[in-house]
Amino acid sequence: MRKILINIEKIPHYWILGIVLIYGLIMAEYYYTLSSKLVIGAANQLVSSSFFVFFMSFNFFLMVLSAFIVWIISSLLLYLILILFGGESIFENFKKISALCYIFPTISFILSFLLLEQIEIYEDVNIDNFLTMNKTMIKIGWIINIGFILYYLFLWLLLKYQTGLNWVRSLSVIIVPLGSIYLLGKLFSEYIL
Figure 1 (cartoon, rainbow, N blue to C red):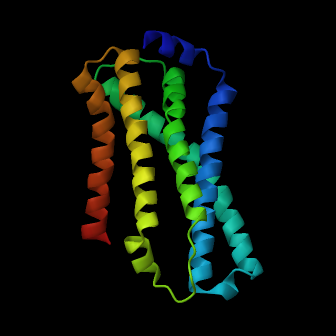
Figure 2: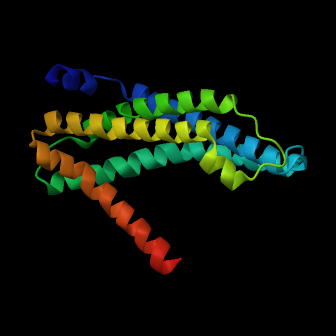
């Protein structure tokens, strides 16, 4: 594992940016295709309007941009939690490790996109029922979730070996931010919204 970490530190920065860009492009294409299929199923006349095309193109750009923003912010958040738990690392190496872990969600979005291409949505379908009851959409949800679970597991293993923290502390570096975000989401959804 140490040899892998030494090799990760030698990876050029533009390769790391390329991984995040590929992740952003594939994720944006997946959501663009999903939105297009759902809108076609709901109202076919919207697809031909120029406003819809502009909105979807703008949304595509924002999804790619958000991949970079989420990568930087989540890396910074995890790095700060790592320092609080007594871990030592260089932020540049930490960003590289967190970006390389995006390989797993990228693969899951590619598989989900391939499954999504096989789905036909008709005009009279109830979108809510379709998203929750369609077996292929349920598989797509599981595939994306498994990709992110692998992301966090791989990040946990790399953090443990890079920082020298024990298993519990390195796992806590991952769980504390995720738990905080989950609890904040619950707070906002139940009491504020």
